[in-house]
Length: 262
Image 1 (cartoon, one colour):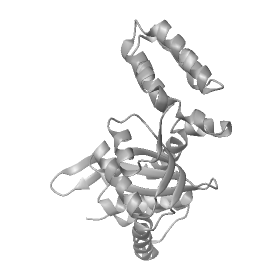
Image 2: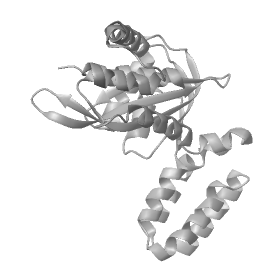
Image 3: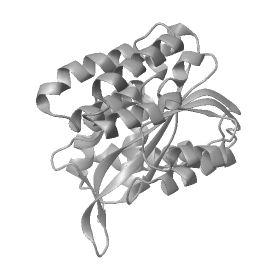
Image 4: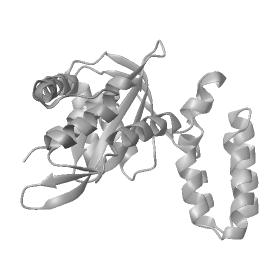
């Protein structure tokens, strides 16, 4: 079964800011479905300066399974002229490096051949997946995700001070200064929290990759915050009553409509 007429009207009203009669709703949703399909398969530009990869979860009805929580993969690109473009959405059972490799392969097939920098969280295997599809691209590991994870691993009394020390690393005026601050973090915290410090030392190249780009871009490149703001808008647009979608095409229609609002 599809979305009820009343539910669909509520969803479209939320997304588009208008009220639709039952008579116009059927034709409108058919048009949206066609547009969403074209959006998902459209050719892409050959080059993007930066691409953010992240996701969100939604509840979807699957025949024989009932309501299940699945992952929506989102790719957001920044063109060389600074224009922001949603490159696509993909609905998969869970988020994984293998899933992302399939997404990246589709971006390649749709024409995206060159990316300077991918910005992502620290999902295991994701950097390797990026290298297999886009071997020339660089990878920036999100410092915000890194800080969040680090603070979750330490005693509550140490969190504020550790957060301040880590801020000196990614907030430094140069890569050299950042590496010096990282040495101070290692000296201050290494014996108490070797796993936390080891993460920053081992992945220092990925955490500090943004220093290789113009300073004006640093706040946008060192984290996925730009993408997370976009995902918050997606969540807001898809929060309707029970927050469940009856089938996959409903998810794509809603995500397409929300993307068009950006």
